[in-house]
Amino acid sequence: MERHIKTYGNFFHEFYGEQNQKVKAKIDFVIELIKHVERVPVKFLKHLEGTDGIYEIRVSTVFKQIRIFCFFDKGELIILTNCFIKKKRKTPTNELVLAKKLKKEYFLKKKNTN
Image 1 (spheres, rainbow, N blue to C red):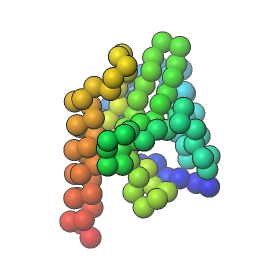
Image 2: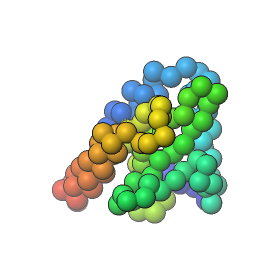
Image 3: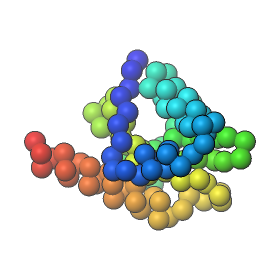
Image 4: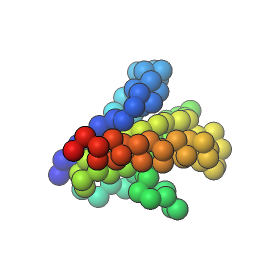
């Protein structure tokens, strides 16, 4: 099993670049796990109810709960969009709206280039 992971926009790269080495290592670990494990535990990848295919990658560190929004394209291709540090129980609406917008934009762009 090998999933491919790509990013859309600069949101992931900017967020990742701001993190310290330990947090980057944890993000890398979770992404590698998602790439190679056939059945990824909900602890690491969860579909967000009420969305059209938006998932959150969950990265837990001692001090931070990180969420990376993503969606699937062609089954084994995962597209990473925006990320944030979760500070409350509820996912911030503006982050979810952005993820939905980026997904729509991605597929529109893809459709127009084919």
